[in-house]
Image (cartoon, rainbow, N blue to C red; front, side, top):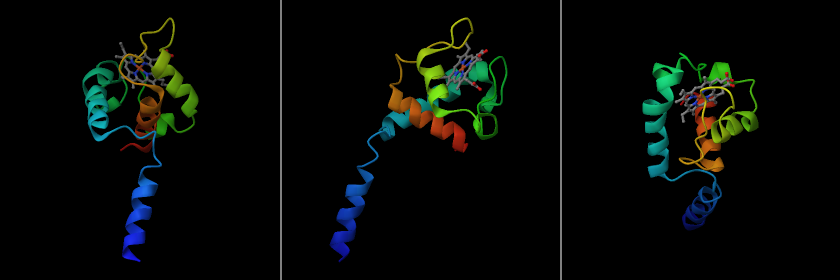
Length: 101
Ligand code: HEC
């Protein structure tokens, strides 16, 4: 019985294929702190770029936010980050920002 539970646990955790590796998660969090905060402010509270937190992002669609980070926004300072992250990784990043964790 115990064995079965372990097998189920392993099987279910591997279902989250979109979740980046621990190394990539650390890399993305470091990038948030060092790069994104340059425009979005310390702790992403907002500066030249808008605040990126659970309150400001709550009513915005994941799709739109992922597209903004992946492609950037033409005519604004928000540039594309597709060289650093793929869409799945950005999807994870958006869920982190929305959850505030
Ligand atoms: C050079 C400055 C700059 C950097 C660096 C930057 N951004 Fe932005 N970002 C902006 C600006 C300015 C906007 C607002 C664009 C507009 O006017 O629509 C924006 C918009 C956004 C939005 C849309 C917010 C909303 O409420 O619609 C997201 C999400 C975002 N940025 C995420 C990021 C992430 C994640 C990073 C780091 C990987 C990052 N940005 C780095 C300047 C920057």
